Structure formats: structure tokens, C-alpha cells
Length: 181
Image (tube, rainbow, N blue to C red):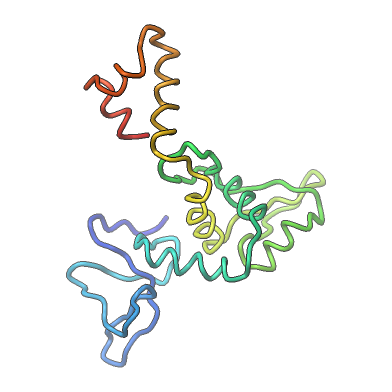
């Protein structure tokens, strides 16, 4: 489990100077991380800096993953719903037929790794770089906020059939539901 340091940004360490100062992967100029406001790690899973995550994803995306390969990565992590506001991975596996060319191409790119073969199938999981690429690519499938709000209205109106869309948009009782869309 990644180290939890709430309130401080965790950068991906790119370079360490002789004096011990650490440069972040997201910094465009060579400067040390301000350790009073942020910290650093070498574990891509522990990074919470959005710019460093983009650098991690670019390492995989630089290998030109296809839209189908990105779809597989999102599916592996359970973040393939375009109505999700923020991608929150809740699983990390994929079952494929032996020799699946897409999975072996993803493995060559460093996005997935084979962890088991059982029942005549291959079981795969994302690497940290594949995870970062999938999370970064979620924005390409995410529906606009207006569509997500309307979807929330449809979900709520199943329980309250007398509710109008206008009431849903203006009633303070549904404020949190609208904000979470």
C-alpha cells in the first residue's frame, strides 16, 4: 500500500543532486522540490501530482497505444464508465485467451504483466505505467458535466417519478448529487 501523506503533493523523483536536493519529473527547469510543501517518491503508485502522473503516462503513451489498448487498460481497472467524474480504479485484472495479440502488445509496451495462467486462460494486471496511462486516458471517454448531471437526474427520478428536471437542478436537497456528477 502506498505511503499516505495527506495534504502534501508527492512528486516522482527524476534526479538527485550532490547536495541531496531532488528534482521532480514534472519540473520544466532544474530546481529542487520545496520540501515544506511537497515530498517525493520513486514509486509511481504513490505519486499524487497530476503533472508527474502525466509524465508517467507519457512513458507508456509514447509507445503509441491504440484506442483499443487504452480501452482494455481502463476495463482492467474498472474505469471504463464514461459517466464517472473521476476515475477510481477498483480492480486490476484481465482474463484473456492464451496468445491474445493485444495483451502481448501491451506487455511489450510495459503496460501490463502476466501474473497467472489457469483454467486455460492468461491472467494479466496493469503495471504502474499502464495504470497511469489508463487513468490519463479516461478524460477522452468522459461525458461532459451536463450529460453526467442529466444521468444523475435519471437515476434519482427512478426513485422519485414526480421529480422534474427543473426541480432537480434547483432543489438544494439535490445539490450534493449534482456536484458529484
